[in-house]
Amino acid sequence: MSLPHGEVRTDVRESEGLSALVADARRGDADASGELLGTVHRLAHRYARARLGTYPSAAQLSDDVAQEVCIAVLSALPRYEERGVPFEAYVYRIAARKVADAQRAHARGPVAADHVVSLVFDGEVDGPEHHVVARDEAARAWSMLEALTPRQREVLVLRVAVGLSTQETADALGMSVVAVRVTQLRGLRELRRHWTEQHR
Image 1: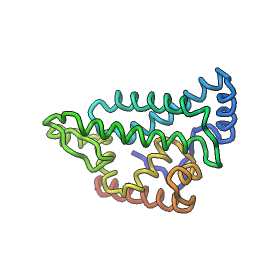
Image 2 (image 1 turned 30 degrees about the vertical axis):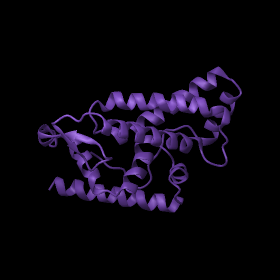
Image 3 (image 1 turned 135 degrees about the vertical axis):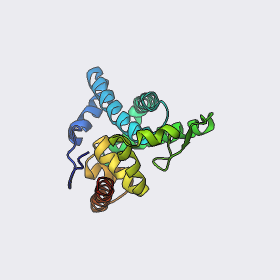
Image 4 (image 1 turned 120 degrees about the vertical axis):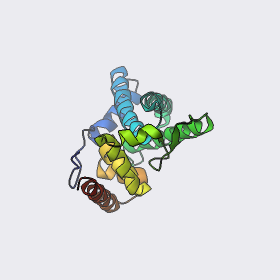
């Protein structure tokens, strides 16, 4: 696992271009609507997988959440007003609510006997077999996230998994750009430290 140093590059459409796409979709442009929903689905799915990755059937659950986010965005689009907040941050806020709904619904449902509560994203992880899978690089990466603060995890999810820019992450979380950068760097530093300790 190689961790990025400093700023993380994004592959998300530039905010200005996305704003134009939103405007076209609101005017009834079918092509723009389709492209916009594709972007929304990608953002929402990345966020959901990052937040729900330790849940049983995480892939299906993430797909469901992404679909719900798309429906919510499509329904709210006629009433959407930019108000200086990037559209990506607007999508994140909807996705965060949908993920929270999915977590609450999962908590109310039956829990298999071989699952225990995880400290990462309030998720569920395998019980006995988790100790075997923990030797895998991906499992170790998940376990390292437990060392981060909730704010550090959320910043890294939005910056790395979702691909929001520093400004978009700041807008979404109600932080300053400087605070996002500091939080991101501290989170990455903590991950590197734990990674180094595990590979000594």
